[in-house]
Image (cartoon, rainbow, N blue to C red):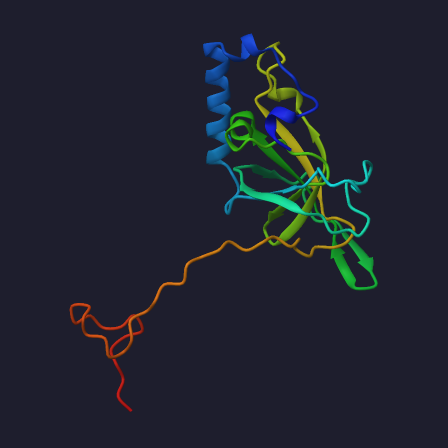
Length: 197
């Protein structure tokens, strides 16, 4: 969902423009970027304009959501339980990861994104689904309604840890020089010197 379309967490725009508020937002954003997980989590935005999207479970009838965009947003990863929870299934032991991600307010404005239930997060080899978005009590600036960041609660979806389909980026294939090409300033080919058999 676009940042301006968010249904909740409004704030006073006049207080938001004040210098001390902007300083607090910048400090919180810098701290989030500095302590962000490496590699950066990838947030996958699900297309909400589909007609058959279930309002409760935020999935389509066939279970194939269309993804609009993939965003690498700096986020701090937290483990609320401190360890993985494992559940025995017919496929064996399956990790029941429940992770939280802290996002800064300025990052959400920069990427024009607001996380909602049903979006996906790819991080550390796991595919998470966002289940809840909240503002922690310590993320409000003084006694205003300006929030400095969000906590996104995630878990591995029931359908499993398979990565959702996302169109791969189009890359232009570069032409490599042939072994007999000497017009490159007599440089050796990228695989080393030519080999004569």
